Structures are given as C-alpha cells and as structure tokens.
Length: 182
Ligand code: FES
Image 1 (cartoon, rainbow, N blue to C red):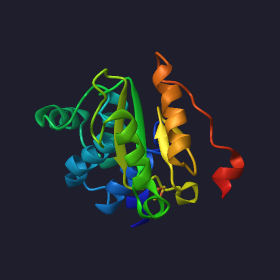
Image 2 (image 1 turned 90 degrees about the vertical axis):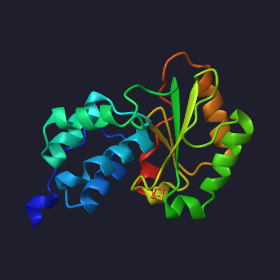
Image 3 (image 1 turned 45 degrees about the vertical axis):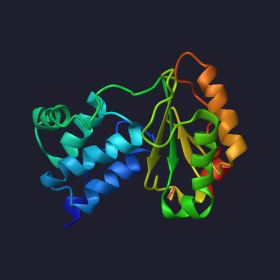
Image 4 (image 1 turned 180 degrees about the horizontal axis):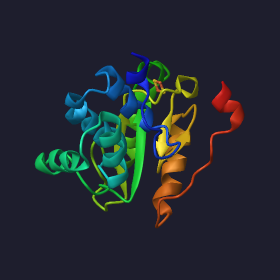
C-alpha cells in the first residue's frame, strides 16, 4: 500500500499544496477524488490554472483533458485569478484556536469582503484553507503565495495593505527558518 501514498512532487514549495495533497490522500489518490480535489484547489488558490490541473492529473492518474473537462464544466471553478492579490487565511483547528476567525473579521472590517469574495476594485481576494500542514505557524495566512506566520489582525492588515499597493503580486517577508522549525 506504500505505493499508493507516493505521489508526484508539488510544482513548488507553496504550502497551499498541502491541503490539496491531503484531500487526495484522504481518498487514497483515487480518481473519484477529482472534483473534491479541485474544490480544495479552488478554495486555497482561488482558481485552477494549468499548473494545478496538471499536478492533480498526475497525482490521480487521470488524463489532463478530463481535469480540464471537469474544471470547465462546473461554473463554480474559476480558471483565472479572481483578484490581483490573494489572501488565504488558514481555518484549520490549530489556526482557529489561535484566533484565525479574528483575522477574517479584520479583513471584513477593513476591506468589506468575506471568504470567497474579491474587493470591488479587483485588488484583493480573500480565501480560506483547512490546514496548511504547518500548524506550528498558527495562525497562518498566505499572501500572494508567501506564508505569514503567527499572524495578528494588525500585522495581517499591514501586510495586506502593503500588498494592495503593489501593482503585481509581491513577495512578502519570507518565513524565517526559526519560525518554520517551531
Ligand atoms: S491549522 Fe493552520 S496550518 Fe494547520
């Protein structure tokens, strides 16, 4: 059964692949996990791009054309980034206990958006993840693909404000080795 747990490496070290892999693992990387997996991709990345679809196709051993077929058939799935920048707040148990709900409240108060929504100017999309698999960073958020550890509402808003001022998705502060090891 060991072979069933071996899957292709994620395309990059973005922590948001962890919930995607966790979904596939929950179904034993079976082909019928496709829709559920695409739901996880949607909720953590905000959209399905070719990189994600190719990775899911390889992990589940289904033709890429079938992944495209499913992703384009259901209008729930989006094939383009919803907003210019994305803020993903982890709502897994560890992050929730450490105040992740306050992070969402802060985003709603400042930007008027709830999870799954984008600001009217198209600048920021707010998303949630179930668990990024790095609970030592709780509460964690991912801004434009970069992990922010041990977030507080003021710290999150400062980082999101800075991100919103940028024309392109930006690299925010990398998580230090020390924090990653905690
Ligand atoms: S619960 Fe947030 S990283 Fe695990």
